[in-house]
Figure 1: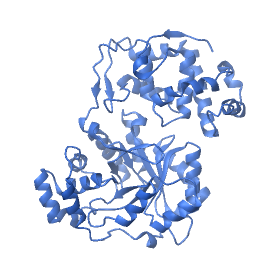
Figure 2: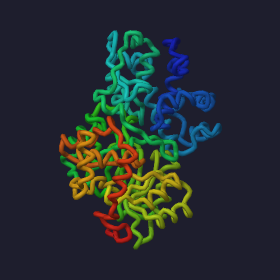
Figure 3: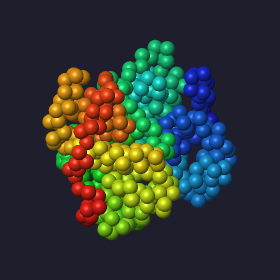
Figure 4: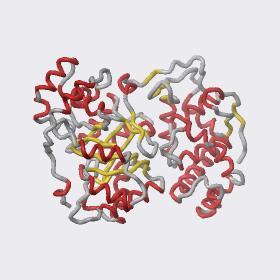
Length: 457
């Protein structure tokens, strides 16, 4: 490949990023596709290892290489191990070379979008993370159309800064379009992946209205979207993601394998179908929806999830509606500890024994039906009193109790005002005394089915 030096100065003291040229960009962009889900900054920190992997890599002859040859090259230094990521490298590398052939250099291609503007509009999801711009979002989408498996807007914006396309001194970096999301709390799962503590659930949301509901949730500030095969609205989620200008790496997408797809090969096939409906290369979290103990295939299904995780096709794996005895089976017979157990949990059904077991094993509880599907919980006198005390609604008190108790929570609504109300949780905290009062109204009252009885296929 022809080296095309384009700019040498960058904020080394801030991000530790060296000079960019087309050779460097080739390495970075092809490998980002292989490491989809990692931030560009994480990739930059691993640059020395990537350079070793590409030391003898003749990029101009990549079209002549077979997958096995490239796999052997990259595996020599242990940089990339699984075949899926190898294919991503090949896909991105070939697409990059085509752009260089068409435009002369990657920077020439980028200039088509920037159009020599003195300043671009810039966004950050949080104050302390790399930025992205409206232009870098458009470039990311165009690269996908050109065959790249994944290139995020943040690494593209970093390139725009490094090449002088953005006047960094003039830049006024706007925080996200809706200020509320900057207050979002994040939890670090047991594998190091960060998940928003508040998400948007889609149970019983018809597919034809799912995209508009999700787009509204995006606008409010939600980034965690929870769908499932059985919800039959994965395609709607995909439409919303495509219609949104949000970078893929800013989103956290969860879906689930249904009971009829239990079994090793069946689960792998179900995952592929979900990806196709979502229009994604990966999901952030893949879950077993129910243990279905009557057929006793959940261990086999979970081993399929482990394979997906080991191949880098999903960032994290977990389960839903598992009792302690089901979790104990996984811990004894499988290698990867689930990151979450998504279960029914609300002030009238607090699941303390299960929560204690999960905490002991570094498994987070994720609460579905967190308000008992709008039932008696919202009429509880204590929640009404606390709502008046804090200037909130009973629903917000119930959801904040979930947050303050350390659970991840996924309320669901298609009503725009409720979507906003359920998100407006981060300007107050419950006192220890009020938390204890809510703990005192537990009735061990389940509204949904007992997992041991849920054997429908």
